Image (tube, rainbow over all chains, first blue to last red; front, side, top):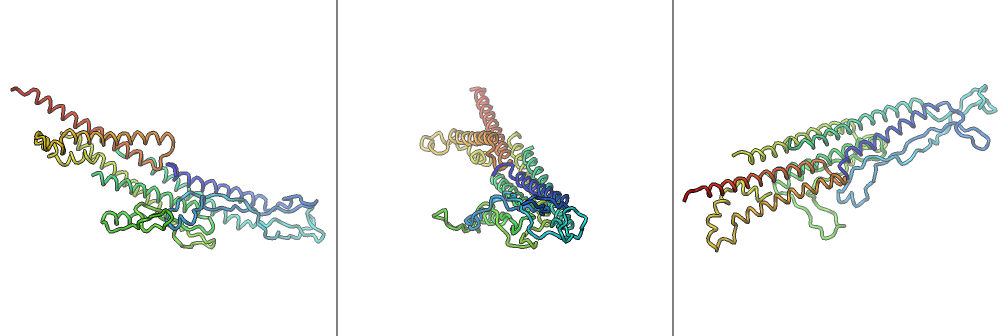
Amino acid sequence: MSMFQPLNISSSALTANRLKMDIISSNIANATTTRGKFVNGEWIPYRRKMVEVEPNGAAPFSHYLNNEMSANGVKVTGIVEDQTPFHPVYDPTNPDSNKDGYVMMPNVDITKEMVDLMSASRAYEANITAFNVGKTMSLKALDIGK
Amino acid sequence: MLQNITILQQALDASVLRHNAISNNLANVNTPNYKPQKVVFEEILKGELSNTRFTGNRTNDKHIQIGKSIPYITEQPVVMQNSGNGVDVDSQMTDLTKNSIWYQTLTYQLSEEFNLLKTAIRSR
Amino acid sequence: MMKIDQLLTNPSAFLETKRAASPAQASETSFSTTLKEALQSANETIVNSEKMSEKIATGEIKNIHDVTIAAQKAQIALQLTTQVRDKVVESYQEIMRMQV
């Protein structure tokens, strides 16, 4: 634990939430991308991506017993692809349509992405507030004795 | 006089720890299965001041501690969201503000203690 | 630091030095030992503050308020020590000026 621990915790969350917002933007931007990946001579649509997070430095069990928990912020463990099926859309004129005239569209739900975006944005704001409070407190500590 | 300073210093330690715990809760507001942390301090201090607390003597570091004399972080087993997360953002934001005011009051009080000592030394 | 505090709140510590003239009591708390101890604890406080400065530079500090509090304690210890020294020198000079 260092003297900048309060700021480090908040900044880890800012990083995580910004990455989350970037990934959501990418999902929205590619909501109709039918050519995401080229596999075995065939185009596969874009797959929705998600960010996985977990508390940084998870405490071992003995710490739970002895109440020696520590606060270390949040950590992004990886970006995973949503494995839900693609949406078939009937559009025979589309160059990527199959022989029945259906085009496979990415499994991105714009409404869901917007909700996630708002949630990430609010979390970002909350952590900025926490950061500023931590900064004020640290600066106040310098005024002791004045 | 100096005991006061020690108590205020311990309270400042606890306040920083509490800020860390609250920041951590806010940082993990979207982490699945995260349980919010809280800091235990006031009860400990009251017990210490009135000498009604006792702590278990440990002969080995691996023993479970009974009672602690320093502020520590503990987890609250609550669930607020579908993901198993237990963070209530509104109450955390309130606690954040409360804790900040508490910290600033403590620093003010500490400054006054020091100024009292300085005046006592200077006067003739 | 605690010793200085006792000195502040218990002025009789000064008075007892007169009685310390008899050799039997000299081993108890003479003014010089009290002063020496007070100086030592003041010095410890200041050294502690210096160690803190070292720790800031190396980034080992846990909490910022620990630094400011240590600095304030050192300042007060030093002020008290110089104040006591001034008083001692002053009273010594007063005695020296006395006409016998």
